[in-house]
Image: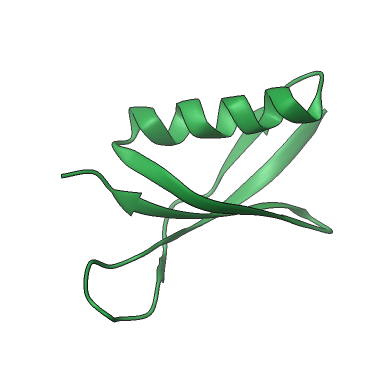
Length: 66
């Protein structure tokens, strides 16, 4: 299965999250999709704070690692 991932980056201050680059993950299971999402964001230097399912894919809130 394949899912589109929309990313929103949480700012260190109290500002609203801003959109980040979207991407697609692919895996044979739901758990595999989440693992692929975490791995992709880790390579981008980001840490996942929350993931939600939407009718069109996945929505990830992340923060940049220092």
